[in-house]
Image 1 (cartoon, rainbow, N blue to C red):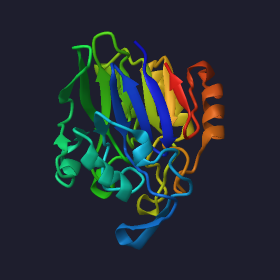
Image 2 (cartoon, one colour; image 1 turned 180 degrees about the vertical axis):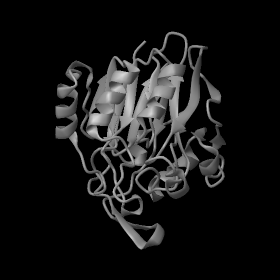
Image 3 (tube, rainbow, N blue to C red; image 1 turned 135 degrees about the vertical axis):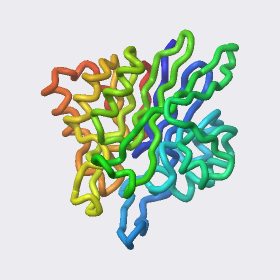
Length: 255
């Protein structure tokens, strides 16, 4: 079977596989400024390709974390009430009504229309350098798998290649990797990477030996410091151009 991915902008994407429709990190607000911890400002610079109404019915949301507006904004939070299942980490589940918490390496089965099961495993993610969790909070990545389905890794906001290696050890046959890239940075961590930079995304693709890599989270916000051009260059330098699938907001690919 195949997976269809529609990028909506930032970390938000629709995933269709096994007859199910999943959504990653819903952020639907119009471009605007947000004031976050310590009075800092983060800015959304581009619109999300589809509105909540245009997205249609969603079977489950894969929420990496809720503490940052680029991953869950006001419209996205309201959208969660329409969704029967929200999978996330324990810290975020405690702050999102009705969300289901998954512990590290714990899985949740979602019934497929064909009678099979989509198995969603929560995997680690580190939103910055070692020790960053005390500042940036807990984040979840996910691996999706099931009989007859491609195995799909959704990194969440992760900056650690060691984390990618852990995932590769547990899941040695990743078909599609959705990597949150963009080289996001903050002054709170002296400009250290909060997500993979472009070279790191290419190295993550190599570590996972993924047949297809679809970057997300690299445009639409001012704190993303590397975009499509840097990703294209990094994958070319790594000899992985044939594995890179770059989508603009609103664009879809079936893999």
